[in-house]
Image (cartoon, rainbow, N blue to C red; front, top):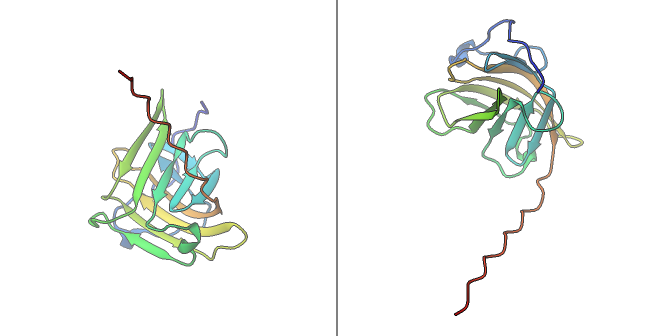
Length: 165
């Protein structure tokens, strides 16, 4: 397991979107009090994955599930989510301490997101998000997400054979 330092930079956490801006920096922040620096961003269908590191299981990162079918539908779109909104994208925070863990947020968080035009298999964006977890996780800045096409659905396993009499 990669040891990441505790986050010691500026704290941009807020649930008040009037105080939230997109800093002019690559996506970074504090997740579960650990320093988050974007290693890879991918967009597959409606799933935006933001993670430390480029390969392997996500040991520190976020998944944000938007309400679109194709990644390209987010091109040029922007959105704001207030903590009081009852309908919001699902956000899953992933981390690893002694084992892999996650926490899911359906509402209660603050987020601003802007996507630029999709081109050449990528889509640029800016994000500010603050989560209501006990460690006050947040990330903010710009990213360039690789658009990945979802693979074919996995085949269902065959039904178990019934004993004959």
